[in-house]
Every structure is written in C-alpha cells, then in structure tokens.
Length: 301
Length: 296
Image 1 (cartoon, one colour):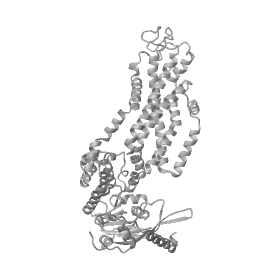
Image 2 (tube, rainbow over the protein chains, first blue to last red):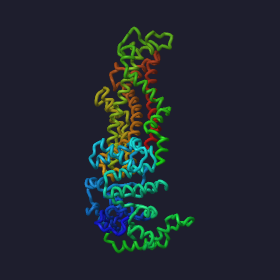
Image 3 (tube, rainbow over the protein chains, first blue to last red):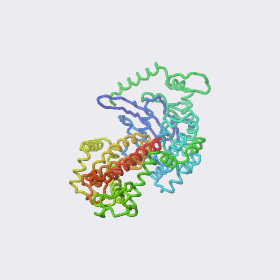
C-alpha cells in the first residue's frame, strides 16, 4: 500500500468534471465538479450509491461519451492528455496498452459466438500486432497467470461452458493482456457470489502488483474497497465528499456520509448487528447541498 | 477454481452439445432426412432417372403408376400425355426446385442480411431509410410482383431466382435488423467498443456470428417459400419452357388431364408438399435447437 497521498505526477487526473443529461429544456446534472487523482501503481476506490455517478466517471475516463449524458465541463487527464474529446481513432489507439477495462458482468461481457482463446488473442493481435501463433501462446500464458484451471481446454471453450468466476478471470486476463498503465474496473465483483468475489479480488490485486498498473476501482461496497484499494474517493450526487488513504477513511471517516456508508457495510466483527441504512435526513441534506451547488453553478447548465 | 472442473464435466464441448441437441430434435432429423432424400435425387439425377425426362414416346401415353393394373414394366410412376417418364421428370424437377431454392434464398439472404445489419447497427437516418424501403417493398403483393418481374426480365431460371430474391430480401432484412439491434445492446458489444475494436469489425466479427443461427433458420424457411414460388411461376409458364421438367409445370400440364390421369398432377403436388413441409419442419426445429446454445 502506498501510504502517503500521491507524490508522483498522477497517471490519471479527473479535474472538476461536470456531466449532465440535457434535452428538451431540461438539464439534469449527474457529475458536479468531481475531481480525483490516481498515482502510478495506485488502486483507487471510487465509492458511492447507485446514481452517484461512479460509472459515468469510469466511462469518461475511458474516453467514451456516457450517452445520454454529456460532459459539460472539466477534464480527464490521462498521462497529462485530455481524453474527454478524443476522436474515435485516437481513443482506440489509447485502449489496450494505455487503458483496459474489467467490466461489471462476466456473464454477458464475452462474445457467446467466439472461443475464449480467440477473444484473448484478438486483443493481442489488435493492440500489439502479434501474429496468430504468438497471440495464441500468449493467451495461454495469460490464462495461466489468472489461474484458470486446464487453460488449454478453456482456450478452446465457449463462454457459456465456463462459470461466472472463470469468465471474470478471462476478462481480467483480457484487461491486463496488453499491459495497460490504467485499468478501469467497473464493479468487477458485483455479479459474482461471495466466495468467488474474494478470489477475484485477490487476483486483481496480484495482477495489479505484478504489472504495476493503476486501477480505478468503481464499487458501491466499502468492504471490497478496504480489501484492495490504496486510496478512496467517496462520491454522492456527483460530488466528491471525501478522498484519502483507505485506512484513514475506514478508521476515521471525516464526512457523515462516509460514516453512514461504513455503518451500512456488513462486518465480521459485529455479528448479529443489523445493517444500518444511510439515514434519510443525511440523504436529504446531501441532496439539498447538490441542488444548492447547481444553483450556484448555473453556468454549466 | 473448482467451478471450472464442475462446469467442464457437465458440458465437455459446445459443438458436441449442439450436435446432440440437433440430432435429438425430431423435426430437425425428419425434415433433414426428407431434404437429404430430395437433395440426393437432385444431385444424382442423371444416375437415378431411368429415362430421359424430355424424351417422348407417343405409343406409351397415360401409362398409370405401378400400383395400377394397367401399369407398364419400367415406368414406376407411369407416363404423361406425351409418354414421358414421370419418375424421371420428378427427379429432374427436384434439381430445378432445389437449385432455385438455394440460389434464391442465398441471394435474398445476402441482400437482406447486409442491409439489416447496417440498419440495425448504425440506426438513425440509415435505419429509417432502409426500414421505409422495406415497408414500401412489402406493400406490393408478392406473387403479382414476381410475375411482373419475370415478365419484364423474360422467363428462365435466373429470372425466377432474381424475382424471388428481389421480393423476399425484406424477410431477412427485418429479422436481421431487429436481432442486430438486440445484439448491439449486449455487454459484449460495449466491451468490444471499449477495448478499441472498430465499427466494421464489431459488426462483422462480433455481431454477425451471433446472428448466424437465426440466418440458418431463415434460410431454411426461405428455401421452402422459394420452392412454392418457383412452382407457382412454372405453373403459369413463367419459369422454364414446359419441355423442362419443373414440378409446377407438371402440375399445370397434369391439370388438363386430371380426369383421365390424376397421377400426372398428384405426384408433383406431393413432391412440392413433402419438400416444403420438410424445409419448414427443419427450419422450426433448427430454431429450437440453435437458440439455447447461442443465448446463454
């Protein structure tokens, strides 16, 4: 774990990002000036409830217009370069060696019509220009690295023939295949059952340490964050409420909302303790703050 | 990691599982067998047909089929009004019927699939243009349109094939468009976009393979339709000259002698029915058998 705040120049810097769904005279803000920095080799958790805008930040980082929303202000600097207004060609060039994605749902994120081996090899051939035999050999290596059992067989199998946990391992192999410098992991364990979750988290952490990549880890689960992330950003209503080192956030949260989120996370040391939802009064206060922000920043709308 | 072993044991190989599902589907097996029967007859027609299908023997007119008392040896299904061997004509007729079926379904499928993929994937004005074209096209009565087309292009097999393809590409286009739109929403397409694959590549390499099972089904059903349309066109003498042994032409000729020699008409009708039923059963069976494999 990197203890101190990032000393190096950040590999990813989200600066005052505004994003809104606009249309027919209505303007619905999604992100209200969100900022975060990720240092090289840092695993950065992005935590929030559904609707907080976590996934939108993830998409913006990957250079995808998060339709139907539009980026209305701010920037996303990847290695100093703004990725919010890349052409499709520039964005594609950035993928693979620059960035990778671990998607949310392993059950549907692989193409059902292609064999596992071909899907891994395709990425290698596309971004690294490998020929077919080299890509095949590297795909086998990758499956070994992500601890897929009987990798030679899995290479020849179709996605529906292997379990969800195995599919997520394959997707992790694809994400790391071209040794990207940044990986966006969009709730990568949410669709998995708990025992598999742990293994997959451990795997992501190990691959990250081995490759030295940075990870933007989008999740709603602070328990997952505590296991894997160096630093955390807490998001609500498209605003960053708190950001800091994971241990500090978990042990001494500064913001009431972070405290409420921690209270809402099941813990092994409090067996039988009921889960406490985020208090309504707090949610109401945060929503009021968000609206006040919109009123004060009318220029973005 | 234990789960790999479990799932591996349960389903050893996808291709094996799909094959098994196909072979245990009664409609696939039955329809496939009948289709194979006609296909073999068509391919080996010169070897199988006992006589030249156009050779006339005016001394042996209206010979009834073998189950009749007045049957002649060597004429299994009898002869027609010009003394031509009906079995040989039916066998050669299968050749024409299946050629038209395959060629017309392939041409219609190619045109419809390309336009359907483009409309479904790109959406917007491209989709609107193609979809309106399909709707206008479908507003024409199909049989009338095919008769007009053949009348304009002149009779002959290629005209029949072109006419069927020109009318029925809309079937492929509509279904492929809808399926492409559905596939486009799938996470694997979003992943492919994120990973950095180009649009043409996503359309051909990622989406099209997932549409193929549907295409196989449509192709089979379209073959059935093409057989009927070819029969209709040759019935009204817009296919091949009546010398050529087409099933529709045989039905048309037989109609005139239906009182003296009903088998002239009944036998080719049975062939059309058997082949079309087989193709429809095969298509429906394939739909059931291929669906679960691709949709998991």
